[in-house]
Length: 485
Ligand SMILES: [Zn+2]
Image 1 (tube, rainbow, N blue to C red):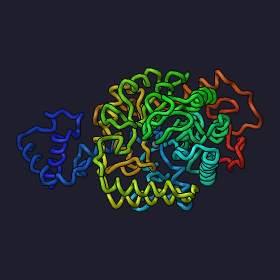
Image 2 (cartoon, rainbow, N blue to C red):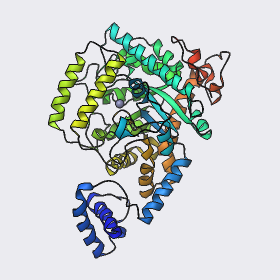
Image 3 (cartoon, rainbow, N blue to C red):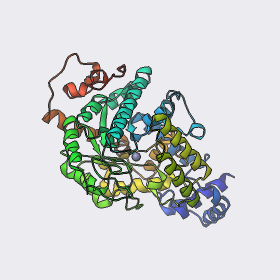
Image 4 (cartoon, rainbow, N blue to C red):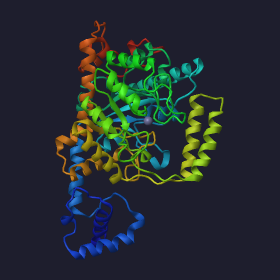
C-alpha cells in the first residue's frame, strides 16, 4: 500500500503538476515507478487532493520543517472577516477550537495557534447598502458596533490577544505569545460622506481601509458592479479619503476596487498601498484580480498583493446553474427585506450558506493557490507578496479549510526552494514594511501634539497621540472598554 500511495502521489505530480519545483528526473527515477504512477492515478483519480502520503519520509521531513519555520517567524493574514462573523454569532467563543464542518467558522485563537498564525487584520466589513442618509447612518452605526464588539472581545481575553496598532506592535505582541489583532475596514461605504469619520475609526484601531466592495459607492468604483463604472476611478470624495488616510497612517486597500481606482490610488497616495485580499488576473481573469501591468506598478510603489484563498478568484470555477438560479431568487428576496438589522443580515448569510451546502461547487486546491502565489512573486517580486486569505468571508478550500492549515503553504514554498528569509517576507515582513512606510510618513509629515495621559498602547513605536490613540480616547460614541496590554 505504501508503494501504491507513493506512486499515486507521484502520478499526480507528473500529470497535474504537483511538486512543480521538483525536477522530473527526480520524480520518475525508474520506468517501473512511472507505470505504478499511471496505474495508481487511475485508481485514485476521484480522490485527487493536494495531500502528501503520511508515510512518505521526505514529505514528513518537509512538513516538520514547515511547521517549525511557521512557529518561528512573524506571520500575518491581512484579511479575515472575523468581526462580521462574530456579530452574526453572538454566543460563539473565539477562544475555543471550532470545526468548519460544524459551524462554518475558520478563525479562532486555538486554530491560529495551531497554524502558527501570530497576527491578522480582522476586517470590519459591510456589504454595500443604500446610499441615502438613512443607509449611510445605518452603515456607520453597524461599523461602530463591530469595532466595539472587537474591543470587548479583546478586553475579555487579555491573556490571549491584544490590539495591534503599529508595525512594531505585531512582533512585540508575538513575543508575548499572544495573537496580535489589527483592525481594518472593508468598504469605505461606512464613512458615508463624512471624512471626519475616518479619524473616528482610526481612533477605534482601524489601520487599513478599502474603497468599495461589490458595488460602486460614494468613494469610487467597484470591480464587480453590474452597472459598470460610475466615477471612472475615485470620486472627488474618494480622492480626499486618500489624503486623509495618508495623514493618519491608514493603509489604503485597493481590493474590490476596479483597476482605475487602483491606478488613482497609486497616483495619489504618497505612500505604498496594499491589495489586502486579491489574486492575479493573468492567472484567472476574474474582475476581482489584478492584471500584471498594474501589479508591477503596485510593486514599483512599494506595495503588496496579499494572496486570496477564495476559490472563485484563484481559478475558473464552473458555475452550478441550479445554484445560481436559486441564489439569485434568494438574494432578490433578501434585498426586498425591509429589516436591515444585524440579525436580518445574519439570517440572510445563513440562508445563502445553507443553499450553497445543498448545491456544492468545485473548490480550488493548494496547487491552484500556489500557482497564483508563484505568479505574483514572479511578476511583483518577493518583496511585494503576502497572504490575505478571506477566511470567514469565503476564503479557504479543500485541504485549507481554516487558518490551522497555513503551514501547508509554507511547505509548498520550501518545496519550491524559497529560503526561510523569503518565506518570512511573504508571511509577514512585507506587510510590516508597508505598514511602517505608511505610518512613518504620517508621523513625520503630520505630527500631532502629545495628549495626556497616554496609555501603554503607544509604546510600540507609535506616532505620538495618534499612534497611542485608544478606543477610550476616541471621539466615537460610547467607547469600548480598553483592552489590557
Ligand atoms: Zn472581500
